[in-house]
Amino acid sequence: MTTETVAPPRRRLPLLSGLRRTQVGLLERVALVAVVVLTLLLLAVPAVLPHTARDIVGDPFVAPGGHFWLGTDSQGRDVFSRVLLGLRTSWFGALAVIVLGALVGGTIGLVAGIAGGVVDTVLMRLTDAALALPGTLVALMVVAALGPSLRNTLLAVAVTWWPWYARIVRGQTRTVMQLPHVDAARLGGFSAVRRALVHVLPGSLGPVLVAASLDIGSVLLVLAGLSFIGLGSPAPAAEIGSMSANGLTYLFNAPWIALAPAVALFAVAVLANFAGDGLQELADA
Image (cartoon, rainbow, N blue to C red; front, side, top):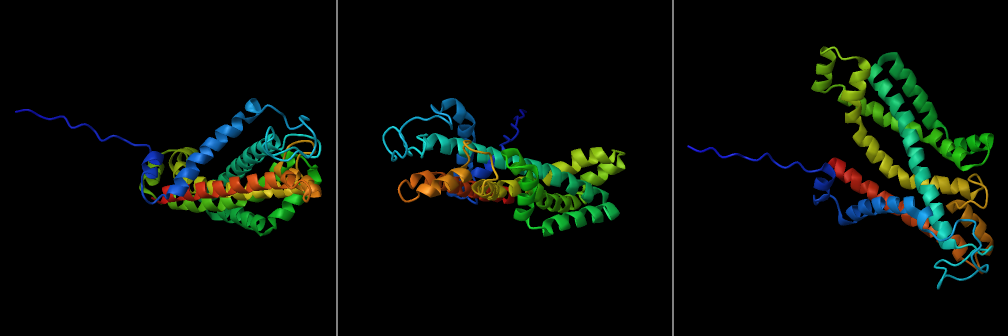
C-alpha cells in the first residue's frame, strides 16, 4: 500500500493575491503600482537630473519644447527639473507628516485603548479638543511662531494630523482587546507592554495604513498651500506651492511657470487618492 505525499498549499503574498481579485479595479491596481514607481523615481531624481533647482540653464521665458520640456522660468532655470525636485520635496514631506502623525496619534490611541478608564477618558478628551481646533489656523500659528521653513511646515501640519490616527487606533485597539489570543496572552502572564506591542498593535495597523494612504493627497495639497503663501522653504528652493505663486506674475505671457507645478501636483494627488482607494479595497477584500 502506497501513500501519496500531499504538498502543502503555496502561500501567496496578501498584496499580490489581493491584486488578482476582481474587487480591486484596474485603475486602482495601476495607481498602486504607479505610486511605487513614482517613489523610486523621486528618490533617484537628484542623481539623474542634469540641472539643480538653482542652475541658470538658458534664457528667461523660453517656451516649452525642444531642449526644455517645460520651458524656463523668469531667471532661466529649467522648469521641468524644478518641478521634479519640488514634487520630491512635497512627496517625501507628506510621507514624513503622515509617519509622524501616525506615530504620535497611534501611541496615544494604543495607550488609551489598552488602559481604559480614566486614562482613556483623559486622552480621548484631549484628542477631541485637538480635533475641534481649525487645523489650517493651527498650522499657520505654528509656522508663524517657529519661522517659515520646510521643517517647521512639516511639523506644523503633523501637529494637526495626529488626532485622526489616535481615534482610529483607539477604536481598533478596543476591538482587538476582545479577541481570544489577547485574553490568552493576559492569562499567560505576559506584561502589558508585550501584549500591546505583540498581540494588539499588529491587529490595529491595517486601518492605519489605509487611512495613511488616503491622507497622502490631502497632505500634499496642505503643504503646497502653505508654501504658496510663503510658509515653506525660502527661495530659490524648489517647492510646488512657491513655484506656482511666483509664476502668477507671468501667468499671461509665460503660463507654464505657474501651471506646470500646479498640474503636476494635482496629478500626483489624484494618483495617491486612487492608490489609497485600491489599498482600502485590498483591506476589505
